[in-house]
Image 1 (cartoon, one colour):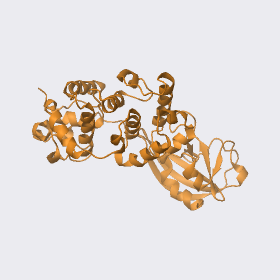
Image 2: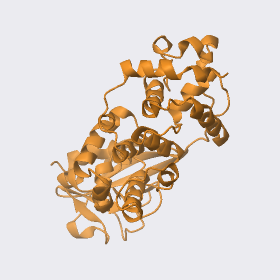
Image 3: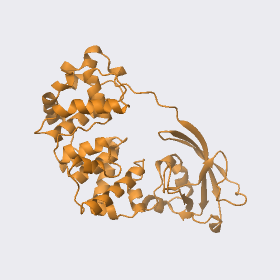
Length: 345
């Protein structure tokens, strides 16, 4: 018998008394669960709450998501990062409209086939919204299960994830699969913490947790080491005319696809669209942004131009338009104070 098999009853009792009040839990429709789970991928709950409220106010259902212009969708998503998640949401919404007449599918295989939906998200939707006894194995759940079982296999390996899903399937309470899934997530997010010591005195699994008994939580879960990120030194060209700054749109594929950005290039290179000499500018500051695989070190150069000096396809943008219209990724958050100084609203 694995220690995890003792978890369901104490876990549900703990969740009853300790569950946080979250907006997607108040009305756990398939659409609400789906959008929240996609937003929460690689993002903390506290950071998602305001985004979720704005998103639902403007796009309250699958039909609205399917129809919203991409530029507006990107603006609603701005700041959450991993923008392909938002595009996949819209693609999947259109799948639902076309293949299921706008009704969210309820079968696991159908949900799993939606664009951008993996095993975990499909499990979360089916267990929480449709109350089906399907495991949902994310990082929180992997951490909880491996610590309780004292399992030191690599959690980044698909074989480990499949094994843990197989361990959970037979112990999901048939009368409360939704509560069980949410309780597992809650336990990992608030007690069996990812960074720093777990709060074992509050944990319903303390009496049978191997990591607690052996004080081995610091090495569990086990993850294969990541490859070091590539460093890119880039110049950000803050091109200013009166109270406007220049933006260009990134290519439709690749990193930050389709978003608007301040022109930037490796080293001190000028943007390839630029012809002729760049007027003399001044130093605007430095910033850094970390992606999963690359780290940008940014040096801002502020240059004042005439209105007709922009390359074709670039736009002049006011501070208000930056706030309301153009989706500029967080990669440039570190230079926004400089922009605000140069083009006050």
